[in-house]
Amino acid sequence: MTGVRVAGVGLTHFGSHPERTGRDLFAEAALNARADAGVPLDDVEQLNVGNFAGSLSEGQGHMAPLLAEAAGLDCPATRYEEACASAGVAVREAVRTVRSGEADVVLAGGVERMTNQDTAAATEALAIAADELFEVRAGVTFPAAYALMATAYGEAFDVDDDELKTDLANVASKNHDNAIPNEYAQYQRELSVQEAVDAPPVAEPLGLFDCCPITDGASAILLVSEAYAAEHDVSADVAVVGTGQATDRMALQDRDHLARTPAADDAAAMAYGEAGIDATDVDVAEVHDCFTIAEVLAIESLGLYEPGEGLGAARRGETRADGETPVNLSGGLKAKGHPVGATGGSQIAEMTRLLRGDHPNSDAVEDAEVGVTHNAGGTVASAVVHVLEVAE
Amino acid sequence: MSDAGFDEWLHAFVADDGYYLACENGHGLLPPRWVCPDCGSTEFTEEALPETGTVATITTVHVAAPAFEDDAPYDTAVVDFGPARVTGIVVDAEPGTVGVGDEVAVDVGASETIGADVLVLRPA
Image (cartoon, each protein chain N blue to C red):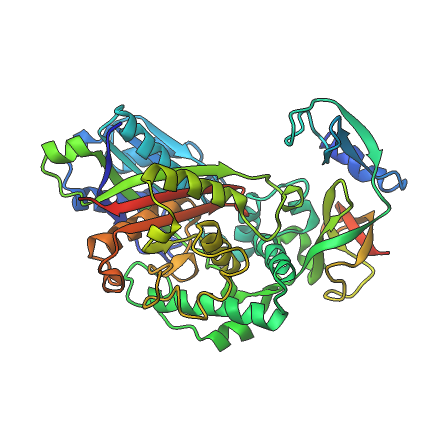
């Protein structure tokens, strides 16, 4: 089994770019990744690309060959769809392909065009990641699904409504602070805890600023084998040393836990096992904070906190940039933005930049050696976890 | 277009004959099912769902999908009936007044926005 290195990463700006097509966005990200890697076009042997709802938002199915063409690639290309974890799965399969020796150079990432629809249409498109019969038909929107988990969390761990809302507002405020210097972020501006607490409700207890925005964007990661990097003198100082994926029941009603995300526990255990680490080794994390409560559930699943202990982490400062284990230094989905099918790749790109030292927030994790990314689909019916390390 | 299994299950509540599927090892499920995801059993029987269940979690939705636009604000809840849980929209109560632990019963109603059949929950 060969080692896997991140040779290059590429992103577009995350934000509102309603006029830009999926192919336009992905081409930019892919070109940026290749430029960052310095790998010739013809050496790319495979494209794995995540996309969630292009068939609804753009009327475009069969996305993979279109995006290969846009990126100038002539190689097998496959689209992965796992809701908000689409790009995480695309990257994971790329890691497995390189690791197996089947290919030395694979481009992975994702793209989503969302703001060309109005909010109602986007809300409807996002809801298809839930169980259509048992949840969507019962009025469950995506914010509502996470709100159901937030209510359950408050009940399970005996947290009163004010404390719940305030602690969640601290997550939002933290992630906005982190996004300020990130040139790729949708919201490079502060958000006070009070502003977040006072925001209009979307699905109680979640308010407007507990929710990630609707975002257009793309991500691309160029993965190479260790042997390829050595032979071609490619600078690739970050290694992907663990990958894990797991599945839970689709609908919340059918889960063993309403206030925990066991699929992410399992994905983390798999990834940590491959990497030979445990949660105490994690120096920095990028997690799937599509809603503020999701960050809380994520850091508990990653083993950074016991169930019920993660809620106050941002308020206590532990997950802030100057805390013990910074979480979402990119700004997270909350402030960097969440182009659904691109997010899992963006997390790997941001973590790579953080560990290489060329991220605007790298100073916060100067001595970091181990970074973890956590990408979730739906209400974490799908979870993908990666462990990245600064290579020896 | 009908959805076999689901439609029969939903409409059984109209005649107060609500049911769930029990696999041969007693796991409770909602149809359609061929395999029990808990144990792999492929044998199911229809069992009566208890008349009332307990709210396990609930939210008041203010920003609805287009199909429920005119219904908002409304409460959606996941309700524990013992062997199975169901999700529905709370009716006959002001949004925000039903809480975790409250007892509700299942019925079938129509969404205000598009008139579609919806699983509704009435305070018991």
